[in-house]
Image (cartoon, rainbow, N blue to C red):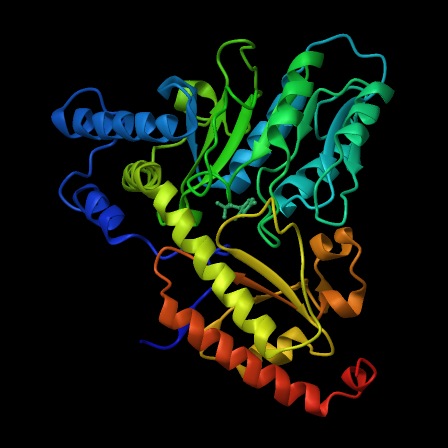
Length: 404
Ligand SMILES: *Cc1c(COP(=O)(O)O)cnc(C)c1O
């Protein structure tokens, strides 16, 4: 077993060697611009892009024409949300309404906040935009009744709710959300960066109109992603956010990242073929890790839902232990804490806070992200290592004394 061990697969994943193999020719001898129509270099690149487009589409039950390549899920979220709100042409007496929820990735929350804050001048929306951020239950799921009530108060242009959370792995009830949006004639966008390739996602079954994908979360390269844009029933209109040569049906100008696109296509193809067996293997590894930690330590709690959860995710609070100190004590394991470093100070995770954890509990939480390349041996090592460090830290902790 090689150290350090990488167990932070929600932050990013190692590129699959098969993905790299597929990309290599497009980084070396096949360097054509996919928009060059006058020679074979361009034709070959265009064909590779179209193959990848079909591979991405197949994984989510879409058609190839509905896939727009972007630089990643952050860009896809921006294009989906701002693009849909700006393109909305329906009669509007007041500001346009967008509904989202508290545990979204910042790429969604900050985009919504930007639309709301900048009123009409920068967004081009005459009457501005109003955002409703729904709360979540103790497992991190939105309640359909809350969504329905928010829709009743004011019909939204768009509902944007992620499919799987990147910190606690909680799966949102996207089938129900999609059905409700469809019934009301409201667009439904989902940030599926953590869900696609990990759990089955089908845009038609779930009535999804817009869906964001990221390459580097599914063993593909960084800096590539896609946005699914429904073309039928309804045909979704978006205002472009990047102006230029009119690439990607005018929705996303810029020379296509051919090697990245080929890599994303290959990553989707592999995920489609292996997802079923991989999720069984990862869930078993995750359960093994949880069981070992629980056998070796008291006062642990699992954050999020035990039932509706990504197979590779485990987020735990270790009472009385500061997660940054814990990770410092286990430097040969790459994990992530329930905190985010914003400019100057360490802020507790907005996701854990939304679940109802207090600041101290949020600062005592660790995210384990298991992925394709983790082994049982690594899980056993990580469990032993954490048990050892947590015990030592608790022996020194006056706060922990209050638990015992
Ligand atoms: C990683 C991630 C993003 C951002 O994706 P990039 O491709 O890195 O821009 C957005 N949403 C979720 C849920 C993510 O996990």
